[in-house]
Image (cartoon, rainbow, N blue to C red; front, side, top):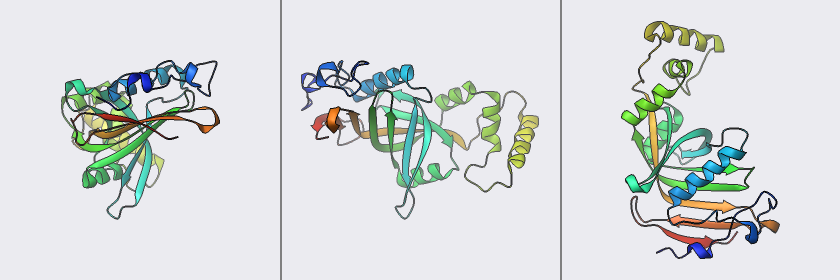
Length: 227
C-alpha cells in the first residue's frame, strides 16, 4: 500500500489553467503503477509536444565518476505486469554512453514537456535488450537509418561528413535493401528503482510524487515530496 493514496494526489494542469491549481489537476497522478502513469503522461505529451515527445536526457558516468548527458529517444515503456518493468531505448553498443552504462550497470534520465509543464525522473539498473525485440525495432526503421547504424562508428573521430556518406554508400552496396541488425547495435532496458513525477504549480508550489522500491521487481512505495 502506498503512503500517498490516490485521493492524496492532486489533479493536473488544465488547458485553461497552465499553472496547475489543485482544482484543475484532472487526475494526472492517479494510480498505483508508476509505469502506467508514465505511459499516460507520454500519451498526453504526444498530443501536445511539437517535437520528439519521447526524448529523454540520459545521464551516465565515466570511470572517474564524471557525468555525461545526452538526448536519446525512448522507444518503449514496459509495464511491470509482464515482469520487472523497464524503459527501453536503442543505440550503438560501441558508443560512449553504452560503454559507460555497461561499466556502471546504472543510469538515470529525465523527460520534460514544456507543453504540459511536467517531468518524469528515473534512476535504475540497466541491461541489454539484444534479442527479438531489438531485431523488430531495427527492422521498423527506415532503410537509410539501418544503413547508418552500420556506417557510423559512433563517438569516434570523423574526417568529414563526406567520409560518413561514403561509408553509408559502401554499406548499401554490401547489404542492399535488407541490412541485418549489427551485433554492435541494440537496446538497453532501464529497470527503475526510483521514478519521480513532477507537475508545475503556481508560485513554484509544484506537486511531486516519488515512487521507490528496494529492488527491481519489488513493491513500490510512493510519497509526496516538497516542491
